[in-house]
Every structure is written in structure tokens, then in C-alpha cells.
Amino acid sequence: MVLAVVALLLTSCATTAAPPQHNAADVMFLQMLIPQNQQGIEIVRLAAARPLPASVKELAAAIEVTQKTEIDDMRGWLREWNQPETVPPQAHAGHGGMKMTSPDLVGALKAAPDGEFTRRFLDVLTGQQQGAVELAQTENGTSGGVNPQARDLARRVIESRTAEVKQLLNVKT
Image 1 (spheres, rainbow, N blue to C red):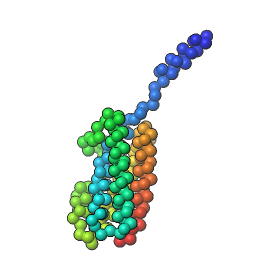
Image 2 (image 1 turned 180 degrees about the vertical axis):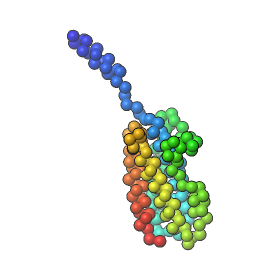
Image 3 (image 1 turned 120 degrees about the horizontal axis):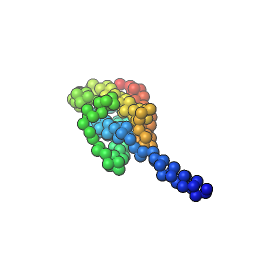
Image 4 (image 1 turned 30 degrees about the vertical axis):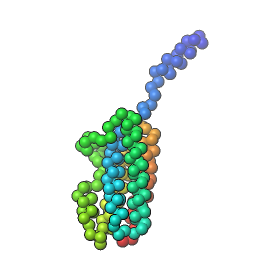
């Protein structure tokens, strides 16, 4: 009788599937956030050579460091999962598409005269950071990811980018 119980327990343990390490939603989230962060870095780097309030320059520098670190982490996870870092942008169209700032807006920001740069920079960066929040919400939504690291990253993105948007909206120009 004892052997039968042990055999039953071993059989049930062997057939219990371990939860997945990651799923397609985790992969999609990382594949979409990497280029979103890269574009964010491109935008905040414009602050260095332009006349902006010191608080905005400090925020831009902090955003760059944070997003670089996030990219490094995400690339590492995708490598561990044997997943590509990038896919064609249309591959995620069914999931709301890429949350990227229009290249035309970024180009106009680069060309903006100093007198208009601050307001445009704040507008473009605010939109960029809001896009990251929307993207992160898909990871932590009901049909989102299962990987604890990716879900934690999404939570941190929501918290940090929301705080950054509030800061950007309170800058006096």
C-alpha cells in the first residue's frame, strides 16, 4: 500500500508541468520596449547641447542611464530565451503596434530653434514616456507575460515613467 501511494505521488509530480519561464507576451514586450527605449535615449540626448532648465537636463540624464540599463537587461533575457531582439514592426500590429514617437516629430525636435526647443522637447518626451507606460501595461495585463523579471520591469516602467511625465508636465517654460 505504501509503495502504491509513493508511486502515485511520484507519477503526479512527474506529470505536473512547471510554469513556463516566459511566454510570447514577455518576448513581445521586450522586443517592443527595446526600440522604444532606444528612441527615448535618442530624444533625451538632445537635451545635453540645448538650453534647458537644469532640472530637465538632470531628468534627461537619469532617463538615459535607466533606459540603457533596461536595454542591457532585456537583451540578456532574450538571449537566455533564444529569442530575437527585434522583429519587423508590423509583427506586433495585432498587439497595439509599436509605441514609438513619430520620426517626423523627432526630426522636427532636432531642427527646432532654441526658443522653441524646450516646449517641443517636453511635449515629445512626455509622449515618449507615456508610450512606455502603455506598453508596460500590456505586459502586466490579464493576457500578459508570466516571467517575473519582465513583469517586474513592466511595473518599474509604469511607476518611473508615470513619475517622469508628472515632472515634465510641471516644468515651467
